Length: 346
Ligand code: NAD
Image (cartoon, rainbow, N blue to C red; front, side, top):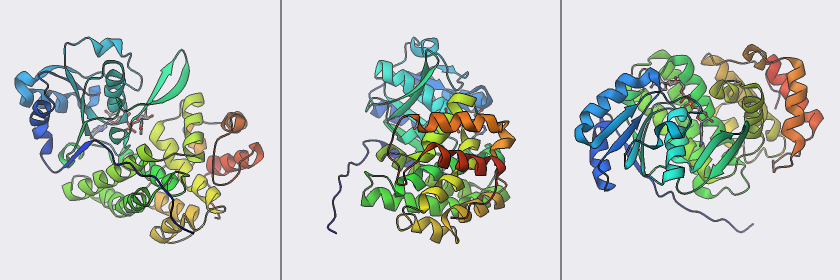
């Protein structure tokens, strides 16, 4: 069959390297800005304060109280002309929410592997409803991957965050709008995490393995921003939105099950996963997740079997594209398997 695809490269500047967070000031000036609002969560306020000190007069102020859904009004009126977000997906999300409303440029220094820093996507909760918006205004202008700021990420969170990123890559491999570059990046991202995560578990302070983790995060996040996601992200969105299950853990637990479910329909497209994780697609991912101490069962997140009935209903009520057709009974069975934490056959 002849090749048919469209491809658009990202407009973001990507900077990689130990100590590169210190170049944030140069980037603020290159963006023609003068005063940055520095964002972080309270866990990372010391790193944010150190960064602001380095920025000197280029820092307007630090807001170190980012949470999953910080009201944007709290920080939108700081007098800043750009935003520097230092942290994981929650902090990046707050920076994106500000940029979406004000069009201020963003510099992100990611410290988890979630990948939000390279997507033009913003998840928001307004009036009790979870929605997702996409806009070029949301895509950060500059991303600085500096491993020195990631050694404090606890091992458990490093594992679940890495599996969260890998889920972007697995779904990108079968995306309807995939292209040769997104597929190359997805497979390379999976390879990066296959090597990095066990090494991070063993030596969390090793900057070179932390840098490999960030490399995987960049690749997997980029494909999340570039192509459409399907069943896996839909189910995780449903579980997080309805039952408030923790973001990275939910992705980590679901990944072997959703990947195994779809492998039945698209074994060729998921062949890189079977090859990288040596086994069946779902089974190989499950063995890998277990070997690095990941949480394995939805029941450990406090979900009940009655919750699974509700989740299967919500996840199938609005039609969306998936490589394998879905219906409520098949999704309910998939959720049961993930709830029990049993090894997928496919
Ligand atoms: P997070 O940002 O919520 O961070 C979890 C905790 O880890 C926080 O308390 C944080 O302070 C701490 N932490 C982060 N890095 C640390 C470090 N290096 N050292 C010490 N502590 C550190 O977790 P997350 O999984 O990165 O982000 C989840 C959020 O991101 C969710 O809201 C999710 O919906 C969103 N997300 C959005 C996209 C997108 O494209 N829009 C993509 C992925 C995730």
